[in-house]
Image (cartoon, rainbow, N blue to C red; front, top):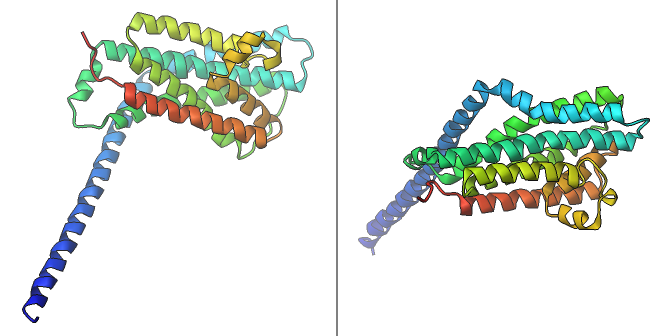
Length: 277
C-alpha cells in the first residue's frame, strides 16, 4: 500500500499537468484569435481612414438630397410624417453604404483574387468575416447619426431619445450590413452583383415601408416587404424615436436580431476564399 501511494500521487500530478497544459493551450488559442481579429480590424480601419471623405459623401449625398427634396415638397407635414421621412432617409443612407457599397467592394475583392492572400495566412475565416462586418458598421453609423441631426434641424422636431434606441440602432445597421456582406461573398460575378445591389437599393428604399407606411403600398409589395430587415428596422426606429421602448419595438428588435444571426450563419457557409475558374 505504501508503494502504491507515491505512484497514485504521481498519477494525480500528471493529470493536473495535463489539465493545466490543456487550459493554457485553450487560452493561447483564444488570445491568438483575438490578435488575428484585431489585426484584420486595423486593416479595415486603415482602408476607411484613407477614403473617409468619399465614404462620408457617398453615405450622405443621396439620402440628404432626398430629405431636403421632401422638405420642400411636403406642405404642413404632421410629426408622424416628418419622423417617417427622417428615419426613411436614415435607412436610405444605411442601404447605400451597408448593402450597396459593402456588397460591391467585397465582390470586387473576391473576383480580383484578393482573398487568395488572406487564405494563405494562418487566420480563421470567421475573424475575416467579422472584420468586414466591423468595417460596414463603422461606415454606416456616422451617416446614420448625422442624417438624424440634420433631419431634426430641417423639420424643427425633437426625437425622444431612450436606452432602447441603442439595440435598435446597432441591430438595424448590423442586419443590413450583414446582408451586404453576404451578397458580396456569394457574388458569382462582379457585374451581376452590381446590377443586383443597385436594383435592391432602389426597390427597398422606395417600394417597401422605408419612406412610406405599409398601408400605402399595394398588397403584393406589402407581402414582399416582410422578407427585408429594413421593414422591421423602419417601424422600430419610428416608434422608438416617437414614444420610446414598447412591446412592438421589442418584437421588431428580435426580428432584426434573427436577420443578423441568419446572415452570419449564411456567410460562414457561403464564404469562398478563391474564385473557381
